[in-house]
Structure formats: structure tokens, C-alpha cells
Image (cartoon, rainbow, N blue to C red; front, top):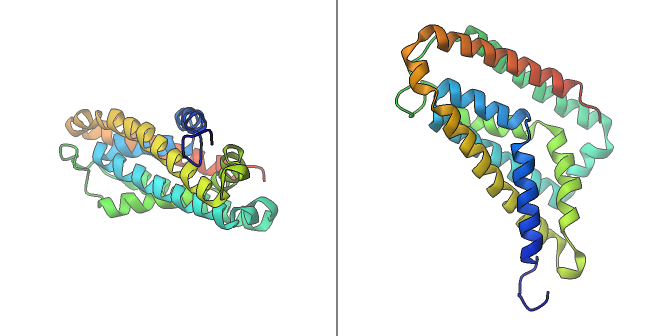
Length: 214
């Protein structure tokens, strides 16, 4: 490794980090989910959703290391099953969003929803998206090289770097969207409208997931 003593060259890590940031910025189900939850429940809630999503990324990284992600790549049944579960959960969230009434957002500490529930939402949202598993399976190994040492350790490092990039981008989204909290706090009508919009977004994400090709 040209004298640096690292298993992955710094230039490779920097390139991978830049690519990860760009991918995290690209509009997708996860960052849209952070945006809607932060706008509805405050920036702290959005940060907990972000942590949940990143925990899901730990699961996907582990799946790549163990080879489990291959199952979703080669098995149409497994892929479809996970896709249906994920879409069903999004529709469940949409149903709750349409039924929700205005609630007070307490100075960034989140609404009445418990942080543990928001954290679980993030995990479920990420883990039940089979495209993430397949993406990790295709993306991470491109930056690994057997000549540098154990691939397992390299994949773990790359997964960690991807998670750091995701925390920075999604965390920023949560903080910016959470700035709407004061406005929402002043208007119950606006809160209800945002809840309805969130419900429509969840339905759209569910349909997008259901129509995803294997």
C-alpha cells in the first residue's frame, strides 16, 4: 500500500466518500422520508429517523459481508416479498398521516411521537428496501481490492464511510426541514395540510417501491 500502512488508500476513501455524498443528496425514498418527518415532528425527530436509516445501512453492510444480499439479487421471490413488506409499511404510515390531527412541536424536541418509534421507522424504511441491499452489493465491492487484504474488513470500512456521509447529508436535511417547526407550531391548519402531503408522499414512495424492477 505504498507505505501508508492503511488497508485502503486515502485517495480511494476520498473518492468513495465523495460518491457517497452525491448519492445521499440524490432525491430518493430515504432523504424524502427524513424531510417529511422533520417537517412534521421537528429536527430532533428527523435526526432520530436519520439514525434509524443509518442503522439499516449497518444491516445492509453486514448482509453484503455475509453474502445474504446475493439472495435478493438472484431470488425474485425474496426480492418481491421484501418489496411488498416495505410498501405495506409505507402505506401504513400514509394511513396514519391522513388520520393525524395537529400536534404541538415542542421546540425541536419532537412531537408526541416517541423517539424510539421514529428510530424504528427509519430502520424499517431502510431495511425493507431491497434495492439498497443490491446497491450495496454492487457499489461497495467496486472500491475493494483483494490485493490489499481481507475483503470483509474493506467492505466494513467502506460501509462505515458511507454511513458517515449519509449522517452528514441526512442530518443537514433534518435540521433544515426542522426549521419549519416554528411555523407549523403557529398554524394547526398548516400542520394538517403537511400531514396530508406527507401521506401522499408515502403513497407515492410505496407505489415506486412496488413497481421497482428486480
